Amino acid sequence: MAIMRHLTSAAEGERLKARIRSWARQLGFTATAFAPVTLPEVAVARLMAWLAAGCHGEMDYMARSAAQRAQPRSLIPEALCIITVRMDYWPRAADAQAVLADPTRAYVARYALGRDYHKLMRSRLKQLALTIEAHVGPFRWRPFSDSAPLMEVELARLAGLGWRGKHTLLLTREGSWFFLGELLTDLPLPPDAPTGAHCGTCTACMAACPTGAITAPYQLDARRCIAYLTIEHKGPIPLELRPLIGNRIYGCDDCQLFCPWNRHTRVSPEADFQPRHGLDAAQLIELFAWDEATFLDRFAGSAIRRIGHTRWLRNIAVALGNAPPSPTVVAALRARLDHPSALVREHVQWALERQLAQTDDPSARPS
Figure 1 (tube, rainbow, N blue to C red):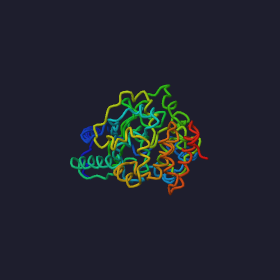
Figure 2: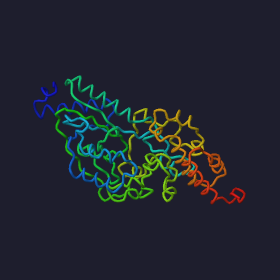
Figure 3: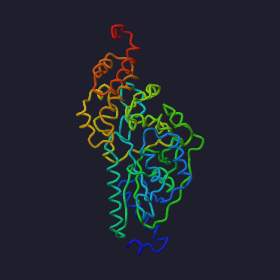
């Protein structure tokens, strides 16, 4: 291939890497680094132990693809280098902690307030690959962003894009509010070196987790994680965890919100990541009233759409059960008691009982 003729020395490789970083910046990527295609045995062992302990919950696809996750070359056998990128997504939005403190409002993870990042990230990575091709000639490449069995955080860590925080997310001195993406290539580029970790003795993320899902430093039990429960989990939310969810109806950001490295987060310039439909501080009652057609229309092009209207109502019902007692809330819940989905009905009934148990109006209680 043409690329093989151009890279005749390590210095040539480093010069090309510098150019790729420049092209990536022009496409909106905050940082770019280069990872090896072979993962450390210790990282693979951690993944297998986590799966064996059942910490992945109902995410069976993670167990099915475990062998692929351990071997990036399963996606491109000829792969020699993985270009890893990050893109900031923190939006201009209502103050996150203020929304969490208002139990009448719905908290949506900040990454999901705008358009779905998967397509945007892969599209930009494709543009990056085409730019590289225009300068060095054809090469094999495939773009990914949370869309393939890859150990994204580990690859980014190996490349020095950041370090793994105690909440298990990638962390940098600029914080953690970013998406990760990968471009698997057969470019013979040398990998970058990992960076040091800078969490020290801090355990703010662990203390902040509402459900205790961070069971130890660098260990997450997805079965207790609000992001898992409100997005990946398809069945009833465990009764003992419902009160701990508060008003979080899609995902959870607490471990990041309380991380000291996120104190000076920069707002993303990407228009697609900015809030749509007032979702950054919407009233729970308002969102609970959406019928399925409204849900599908409002969330066209959104990551939220994939959970479907039924789980959307399930999640909001839990939040309404945690809201202060209100005749308006009680009326809204009663209006959903005959919903076609047994899953929705059960969560609505739970929420209604929570509301009525707190009311001082005897006439509001069931006879």
